[in-house]
Length: 387
Image 1 (cartoon, rainbow, N blue to C red):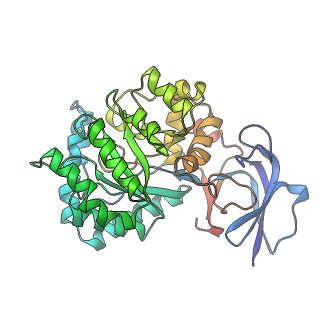
Image 2 (image 1 turned 120 degrees about the horizontal axis):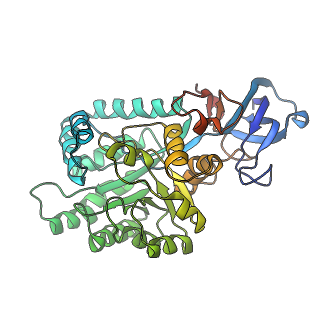
Image 3 (image 1 turned 120 degrees about the vertical axis):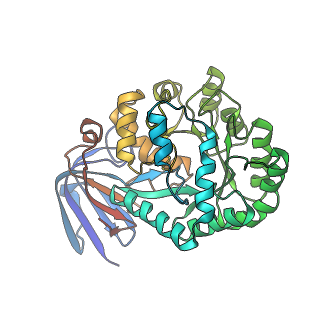
């Protein structure tokens, strides 16, 4: 076994209040010891045990690697023209997904895999060490299974989203039967999660319930695209079914907020989507004040949020959504881990995976204080330095 001490850390964010001060478990003048792929010690630099190697953090801040719990990275083509038109006044709707479906079906396996890996590496260079991604741009049995097979070869958090939209010229009832039947049978072996876009123009509450319950019966865990464009049944359905996460949560009633507060479902907010579609921002402050667990994610996809930058989304959450810098960083790390029901990532504590982000700044507050500035100095994933 090989051990490494990272020392001279100006501020260490552990996300473990037992190790340091406040909800972030911050430790000033700190050190971390990693052994192979795990953290084995974290605390004051003066108390650090001996290790085989030493890395000088140079008075920088060390935080957990970002956990991005919502993305759509198995796709072909892009939607530059749609984005340009939207920025020129055309409203966003769910229908634009079909443009990417056509391009994805036309792409080869090798093209889809290369594009997926390019985006995963782009995110990793910025500090994202855990990334979920979905199918949803195939919408046939063969294309959805292909997307998940490709995704599973590159990332360990894979979601079946055959219920993204109903393909054109297809009867909705027939498509729901396909998604809950033959398509699910082909896709379930490659996925951990089942998801549905519960929204006007996509799937209503009854259809979403049928899709999620079929996935649960197959052994998949649930997550839901909920309440992005309209107030609807998605959030309360997610809570009722024990989904790990309700994602978007942009249009919430008081009953929706109360349901999230009383349940175990994480509210995952995706500010990149609101930035790119000029929709109203989610009210993170309202959720946090109600006691809801909140995560932040990029929603990286070619149509409505083409960014892989968790730091950008964190800055948006602080500036536009009422979050403090501490809350935003927690949501982008430990919150994302909660949305994926993971206890081995999103923290820096003995026994967890050594996923670390060394910032080119003395404090994590600089992520919001200096928006748009590349502050990634070094990244470790599973103990290996990758940037």
